[in-house]
Image (tube, rainbow, N blue to C red; front, side):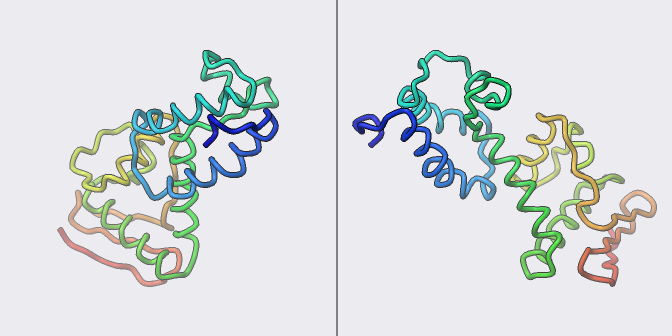
Length: 182
C-alpha cells in the first residue's frame, strides 16, 4: 500500500504514528518475540516509511530512533515497544482488583515459587534462571536485562523462610496469605 501511495512526508509520518504503530503495537505486550524477530518484522515496513518521510534509506538506526527533542527522527523500536508494553500491562493488572489481576498475581507467585529465588525474579534480570518455564516471563526478564532495568514490588511482598521450604505471597488485592510447602 505505502510503496504505491502518493503520500507526502507529513502524511507518511502521520500514517506511521496514527496507523502503523498502533496496529502493530497493539498486540506486542501479549507476545514474546525476540529482538531479532521484531527487527525482521519491522525492517521492510520501516524502509518504505522512512523513505516516504524523506529520510535516506541508509540513515543510521540510532538517528532514526532518537528522540526528536535531541535531533532524532522519533521512530520507535518494536522491541522496546513490546518490553515497555509488557511492563505497563503487568503493573496495571497487578494494581487492579479484577479477575485478570488475581490471575496475574497467582501466575507471578507461582513463577517466583518455581524459580526458588529469595529475591523477585524481576529485580535481578541478569541472573540466569534456566528452570523458569514461562516464555513470556523469560522475554520480559531479557528486556529488563537489556535496558539494565528491574521491577520491584511486583506484588506487595514475597516472603521466604528457609530455602524454598515455605513460601507465602501477600497479594495487593487480597489480605490473606497463600502458604505452599515444597
